[in-house]
Image (cartoon, rainbow, N blue to C red; front, side, top):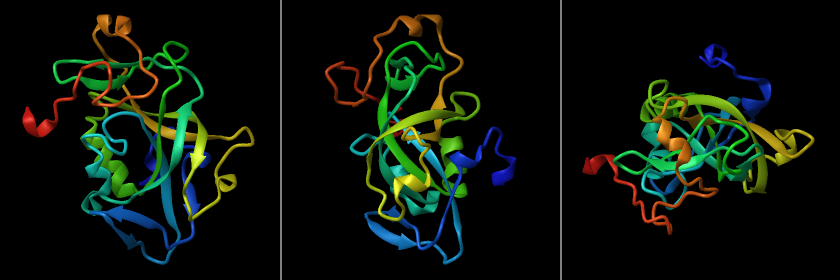
Length: 193
């Protein structure tokens, strides 16, 4: 499966010696003792800690997602809150907007497939590689030097919006999403729709 992921580069798919630790339902589980291939994913919206959909990253039935640290996009992107459910969307317009702060997770193949489905990829969101500057590294399983480029960046998968209403480009751009933020646009969770 890993070889069939379009655009996957060596730096975006690291190898780690097990045991890798993954959060699941508030406890830790161990993966098997073989080398586990994990892909870095950068989340900037409702999947972050303390946000409405973070629970899906903690659910071991979806796969493994291990928090590694915090980062921000190297290039600016418009992060807007749009649509009737106030969904945070990173518009695929590099060079516009602001550098966006988020969290970096190492995910296994099962979680990556789950996130593709959860994010409606490729219809609603598209998964693309984006260069992320690491701000804080908390992954205790590996030093950042093992996966970072010499400039302190990491290629991560990001779910962005390539198709959107033209007026979204004119919405306020945010650098750090919080569903309870000053913007007053509270996210409407899927279970309430």
